Length: 205
Image 1: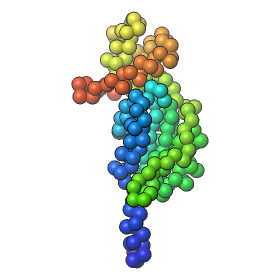
Image 2: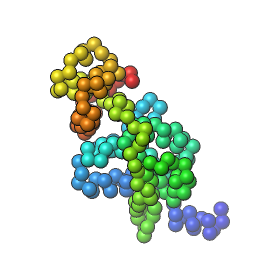
Image 3: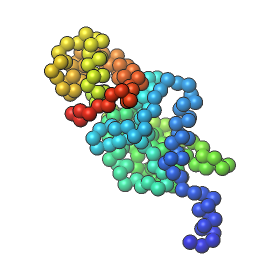
Image 4: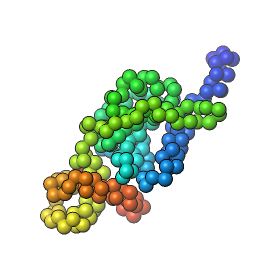
């Protein structure tokens, strides 16, 4: 590496995941909107989202962060899984991948770009997300633990859950509740969940 390359690298250091997250989250947290952001959130057995935001007024929003040290190798599979579980999805990246990202992402995915401006990292939106055509409430209900599903059943006086597994309880809820009301219950459960008290260990889907 010659002197000029070294100076350029010093002026534009690699954009790291740990530096990108606070910039992204601060924008939403400053809005004052009721929401909860969960990092490293398990969407399904094959996919862990970098972050998922539960915001009753917006929806369930997934964020996949690609720093300068990451690659886009797994992006196709990640897009498939995020799209099934989140209402809206965004790729958060820097200048290194911004053009490539726009080429490979489906049109309903949004894109945020984080770049250095006047010595500070700034977040700009390159493309707004649209509702995922692949998202399903039955997939989103998989976020809930069995005791949370049962609490919803009890609150709405739906019987027949005692001997059923999570899959069958979810089906009972879908068959007996208005979808919008059920989605509201899902938000409340995720907003109020206390991981320090209880941790789900049953992996049954």
